Image 1: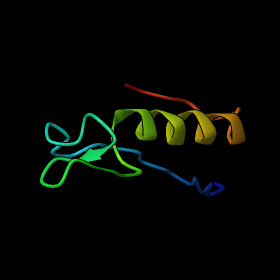
Image 2 (image 1 turned 180 degrees about the vertical axis):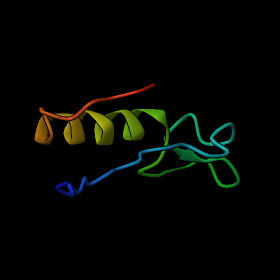
Image 3 (image 1 turned 30 degrees about the vertical axis):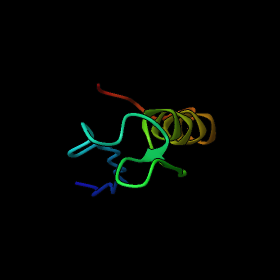
Length: 56
């Protein structure tokens, strides 16, 4: 019997309710955060890993 290995990448979100927009809510300063940033990261990952399987 042969043994195969697999690489697993898990992209997840946690506690995003306070980070929907790209601003720091305490100071209203612009920041590189938010759902648009997460979306960009996911799209870039998928573009680099086209043969992968995705669950959502």
